[in-house]
Picture 1 (cartoon, protein in one colour):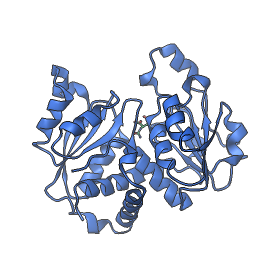
Picture 2 (tube, helix red, strand yellow; picture 1 turned 45 degrees about the vertical axis):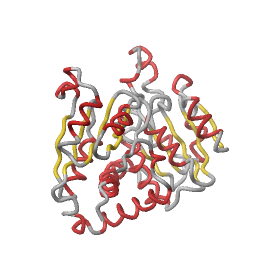
Picture 3 (cartoon, protein in one colour; picture 1 turned 120 degrees about the vertical axis):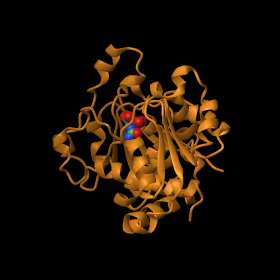
Picture 4 (cartoon, protein in one colour; picture 1 turned 60 degrees about the vertical axis):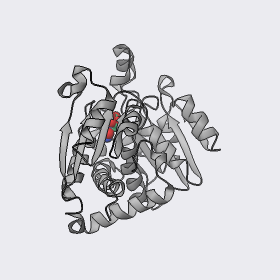
Length: 304
Ligand code: NCD
């Protein structure tokens, strides 16, 4: 039995296979409509979510399965003091697979060690978010046809942005990827990722506060919101929240085939007037997340 806690739990071959399955689901959705007949997904969301939870739910319904679960800690026994270990032991009796989001880093890992069914990390604190990365990878693959030879700009809250952490891990296995890290000084990428992933892997990376300076070089621009819920101090959040606002004017120097991604929700870091630009991929990206979650559920449930 396998879980997905970290994007590196999947080999490059398995990522390629998930992408092939997702592409096939997009082409032939009817082939998949009953694949998970009689199976149940439990969504245990101890932290708010729209896209991730609903796309897991939609994914399971489109595979012919059922969904049970909760969308806030207050409506679960966690509010009575139940441990994660006990919650997942119990939920394993009712569901075939679990998707868990939790504000504490490492909670889904603990859950996977106690669970009788596969656990998918649907975001743990400021740490990782592997299924968002699957959505990001399908988007990059469909836009660029490759993961190697790319200059990838990651912009915004690189400190707390878990989607950024997982995406860097995932892309660090491909050839000639250059990372451009664009953030205010207070929100730079954590040292453990710089040291363990980028420096150890011999990756070229460049840190800057200036998005416009690097715009002409980028093949991918991954925008993120400043993660208000992870700040200790509201005044710091207010000072930093509008550090970057992508507008059509700032895109004038960008490549014609730039792909603009954002895990969403956005809170001002991409102006609405960018949405009509053919380089804006973030709504497609949200749709692709559903197909990759379908492919992942099939893989973890070993449904062929
Ligand atoms: C992201 C998350 O939860 O980390 N959202 C998502 O899952 N699409 C990004 C965010 O909340 O900023």
